[in-house]
Image 1: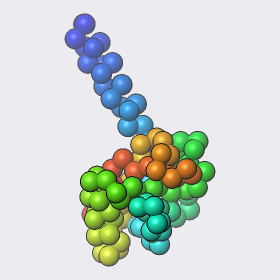
Image 2: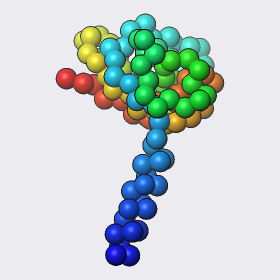
Image 3: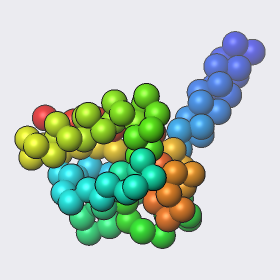
Image 4: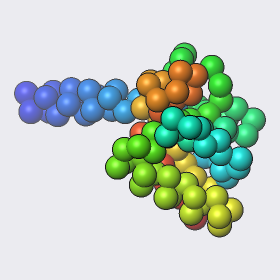
Length: 109
């Protein structure tokens, strides 16, 4: 019973670390900002679970980091191919004040 409880608590705490907004869309019109940030806008504002700081419907990628460069490569691939992406946010707006920071993204199909 004790191991089950510890496992359950660990699972819930790990989930809450990555609790952010989620959206699936075809990327269009990314904004390449001078500060090493790329802004994505979701069509129709379709972000489930976006944090309150995300007053603009979209996500931000910090392309000055290794993770951001990988995310940017995937984004450009999906953009060039017209493929959908699923974006999961971090739950905070620490890259751009009114957009949730991308935790990870996946090319769909």
